[in-house]
Amino acid sequence: MDISKLAASIAESPTVKLNAEAAKLRAQGEAIVHFGIGEPKNKAPMSAISSAIEKLNSGEVKYAPSDGLPSLKKAIVRYTEKNYGRTIDPANVIVSDGAKHSIFNVLYALINPGDQVIILAPYWVSYPEMVKMVNGVPVIVTPADGSFYPKLSEIEKAVTPSTRAIIINSPNNPSGAIFSDELVGEIVEFCERKNIYLLTDDIYHKLIFDGKKIAPVYNFTKKDIESTNVIVINGISKTYGMTGFRVGWVVANRKLVKVMTNIQGQITTCNSPICQVAAEAALNGDQSCVDTLRDTIEKNRDTVMRELQSIPGMKVVKPQGAFYCFPDFSAFNKDSMALADFLLKKALVVTVPGKEFGMEGHLRLSYAGAPSEVADGLARIKWALDPNAPREIQIGNRKVTRDW
Image (cartoon, rainbow, N blue to C red; front, side, top):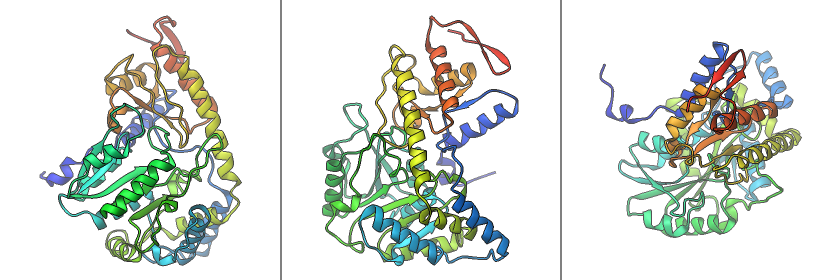
C-alpha cells in the first residue's frame, strides 16, 4: 500500500509505544514498573466526576460549539486572570482535545511549508513531529554547555528569515527544569521585536517544587492580548491528573482563535461536552487536589534524587517542576536506546531513551506514580547498574539474571 511521503516521515511516538509494550508485559503477568508514561496516578477531582455523571444522566450529550462550551471558556478566562494576571475575553480562547491537539492546531494555523520552528533541547518528543506534520522545519537548539538551559544568544544564532515560531516548555518535559524569569523575558522581547510567535506550553505550570514561584509569561510583554506574539497552551491533564478527559486550550488573539475554530470545525467538530463540563468543574472547584498532587510528586522527586545520587557515575540535575527526571547515564552506556532496552528486559523497568528528546546518553524517568512503585523501580535500576550487586534477584513471580 502506498502512503504519503509526509505520513511516512512521521516517527512513532516512543512514549505511546512504550505504554503498549508495558501493557503487553503486564498482561503476561510481568511485574513492570513504568517510568515511561507522563501520567499522574491520582484520581480525577470528584467535582469533575460528578459533573460528567450529571451530564451523562441528562441524556443531552450533543454537539458543542467548535471553540468550546461558553461556560468552560468563561472558566478558562477566570483561570487566566487568576494565574496569569491578564484579562482576556472568551473570544481569545479555544478548547481542543488535549494540549497536544491545541499545539498542533496552532502550528497548523501559523506554519507555511518551509517555515522554521525553533525547539529547545531537551524537548518533548512530539514537537518536531508536529512541526513536520504541517510541512514546517523543526530547528533544534541544544545548549552548548550540556545543560538544560539555553542562552538567548544560542537561540538568536538559529533564527533565519524563515523562522516563524519558537516553542518553550517550562517546567520542562523531560528534564523538570524551569527557565529563569530573565531568560523568558529575553525570549518574549526578542520574539516581539522580530515578529516571531512564541508558543508557551504551560501544561506543568502548577507543578513547581520547593516553594518556587515563576512569573507569568504575560508579565514580560507590554502588548495586549490582540497584539502580543505570545500564545499560551494549557490543559487539565497534568495539573488535575485528568489525562483521559483530553481537554486543552489555547489563549491567543481573536483572529488566530477564529482560524483555529475553522480548522477544528472541519476536523473534530468539537471536544466532548462530557469532558468539557468535567474540566469546567475542575477549574472552578476546590483546588486542594492540585496541592496534594504536587506534594506527592515532590516527595517522589526527593526519593528519585536520593537514590540516583547514590549510584556511582550517575549525573543528575535536580528537577524543579513537572514530574520527570533526566539523568545522564552515559557512564554506563552512551546508547540510550540500548540502555532502556537493557533495563526493560533485565529489571522490568520502563524508561524513555534520551535520544527521543534530543539528548543522547540520558533516560527520562517519570516519577508521577505511587511512591512504593517509584522506590521499587529505582531499587531495580540500582541493582541492574551495580556490578557488585547479586547477579540474580526475584522480581514478581520470577527470578531475573543480569548479564554483563
